[in-house]
Length: 269
Length: 362
Image 1 (cartoon, rainbow over the protein chains, first blue to last red):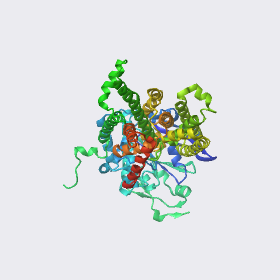
Image 2 (image 1 turned 90 degrees about the vertical axis):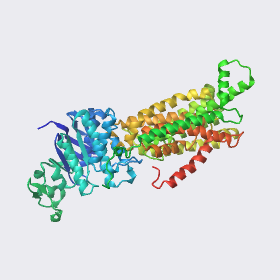
Image 3 (image 1 turned 180 degrees about the vertical axis):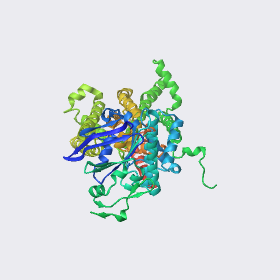
Image 4 (image 1 turned 90 degrees about the horizontal axis):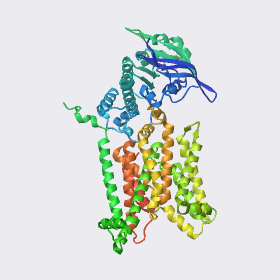
């Protein structure tokens, strides 16, 4: 097993007397795509914020390449991991190309003009915005905006990879605003990153998409880890009943036996 | 095939860098033009052609030719310092306006929001009205420097207070800063009003003229005294371009991009209060430059601070001497307070922008 690129160990987060996270651990290894699942308010985004370095845990540690994130200089962390929040507001009308280029603004990347152009071009193509590079942020649909920001994240990841090797991709509900084709596209991009030797950690609500693309799943419920493992191990009728309060027996898709859920068969408990 | 194929130039869609650089060159040309105009035009009728003679008079030192002396006085001791002052103040107001709009992610922000203008204004009005009473020791100590020094100190004091109020555990909340800025602005405004209310007629006239803004008090000594503040703000701007771009995405996103957000905020606020305090001290409160100029620049260059900050500095530095020429000529031989000119020209123009650009200008 490869060494973890990012590791959360025993993270606990307290806010106003509530335990948002309680002793949660998560390992993101090179080559792995990990889906973080769970009901609304379970603590998924809090876990994401810990890994992104936006907040520090009250107990436990977050390490990148074995070094505690708190001790990692901001620019070094920025070269190792890129983050797509649920939504990003932009007060001023950047074009799609300029948004993508913001991902290359990390100090110390030292890219040549040709590399910048190539990275932006590749990122825009990856998110299917290559024909919209000149449109401004305010003229984009919600899904297009999210993909423009994903292009920015991919640019940062590509530049970081050039400097320090494949890094960590953190996505918070990247498919929420996307149509079916672009849901697949976004997850294929994350899959490709993992297959290149990076780690991808993605918060998802669509359990079927998670089952199709993830190597591992982590289910969080009320701030605690409720289940963890390969999709077939995690997506069980018991877990669905306990965590989501839904009675539903997963089926499997041949040939690999990937689990799937049919909401038509579900009953709320 | 009807579909447009990717041409070599297709990579340039959405890339406004060439346009932005062209715009910066044009702003620089406009600055040169405005400076020449401002030095050349005045009620005495002495033009630019007299400049070589004036410089000769300066270097000769002991000329007795009264015409040459007069030209030297008008060009080098009156118009040139006034022009330099206009350039510095215009550039400072515009670049700090751009910084604040970026920092607050709000197109309506201006240097007044961090309390710098109102703090400097309160301090200056206090010195004008209480200089022969309560503040006598200060005026006696500092002499002619009492007004500028108090204004810079006032700007720094209000901004520091604002920063303390809106910082918890080492993190500055931009929303709290904005709200506290409104509260502190109201307080300093009320205190200023109180002083104006109790002022006598002569003080009232001084205060009124000062609050309307003016470049008439320009002198090389006062410019040199304020220059360090402007230079500091300019140096800060160079360091702030990248982090401010990242901050436009949001604080969390800026952290993701490796930006030291707290240091960025402190630097932007300190640079703004220093530059605005110095500008207010030299020329009173001049409105609309700080808000209109960055918008104009952004329309041409796009919102990246790499271009908005230098573009605002150049265009602000060009616009204020031009507005000052108008202030000097419109009612010559008297002159209008420049704050009136910038507001009369700036406000309708701003409204016109808002009306004609359907999607808004932000």
